[in-house]
Length: 260
Ligand SMILES: NC(=O)c1ccc[n+]([C@@H]2O[C@H](COP(=O)([O-])OP(=O)(O)OC[C@H]3O[C@@H](n4cnc5c(N)ncnc54)[C@H](OP(=O)(O)O)[C@@H]3O)[C@@H](O)[C@H]2O)c1
Image (cartoon, protein in one colour):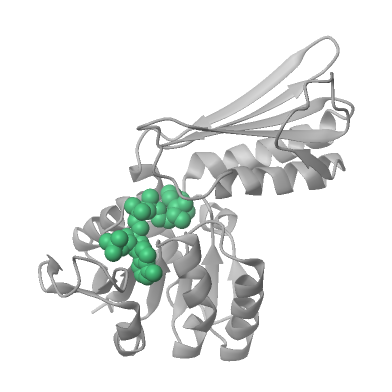
C-alpha cells in the first residue's frame, strides 16, 4: 500500500489554509495530521475537520513527530517566528506565507542543509503566476530603456503591502533589467528614470491581480495575472506537497521545479 503523506497545516482556519485542508481531506494520498491556529485563537481545541482539532503552535513539535510535511500559511510575523526550526523535526517544509523575514529564511536554509530535509518556498502557488514571473523576467531583459511599473491589487484584509508576489516580481525584473532602484511614491515632478515604480491597491474581494507595464517612447507592453479563485493557490499547494514528499536533499526548492 502507498503510504499517506502526513501533513500538518499552519493557518488551518485561514482563507487559504482552510481550503488546503479541505483539499487534503478530499485527496486519497494525503492525510491531515494536524491543524495549527494562532495561540489566542477562538478555534483552539475545536474539531475543525473530522478527527482534526485546532492546535496551538506550541503543540507543533508533538504533531511533527508523526508527520512528513509542515505547510505554513499563517502570517508574516507568525511564520518568521516559527519556520526556521521546522527542519530540526526531520520534516519537509512548504512555506506559502509571504513576507517572511530574510534572517528567518537564512536560518531555515541552513537548518534544511544540516538536517538533510527539504523545503519549498513560494509566495504564489498558482501555475499562471509562475509563468507570469518567467515572462516578466524575459521582457525586462529584452526591453532595455523602457520604464517599468508593477501594479498589484488584493483584498482589503491582506496583511502585507506590497504583496509577496509583487516583491518577487520586482526582484526578478530588477535582476533582468539591471535597474536596482524602486520608487513606491511619485514626487509629481515628472518622469523618474531608472527606477522601477511599484503601486499597491486594496479592494474588498480581489483575490490577487498583478501587472507589469513596460513603457517605451512609442509603445507600451503590459502583462497581467489575475487569480480568479483561491483554488489556484490551493491546487498548487497540494501539487507541491506531493512533489516534495520523500525529498531529503538538504535543499530549498521553488515552484518552477514542481511545474517542470
Ligand atoms: N503562496 C501562495 O500562493 C499564497 C496565496 C495566498 C495567500 N498567501 C499567503 O498566505 C498567508 C495566509 O493568507 P490568508 O489569506 O489565508 O490569511 P488569513 O485568512 O488571515 O489566515 C491566517 C491563518 O494563520 C493563523 N495564524 C495567525 N497568527 C498565527 C500564529 N501566531 N501562529 C499560528 N497561526 C497563526 C490564523 O489563525 P486564527 O484562526 O487563530 O486567526 C489563520 O488560520 C499570508 O501570508 C498570505 O500572503 C500565499
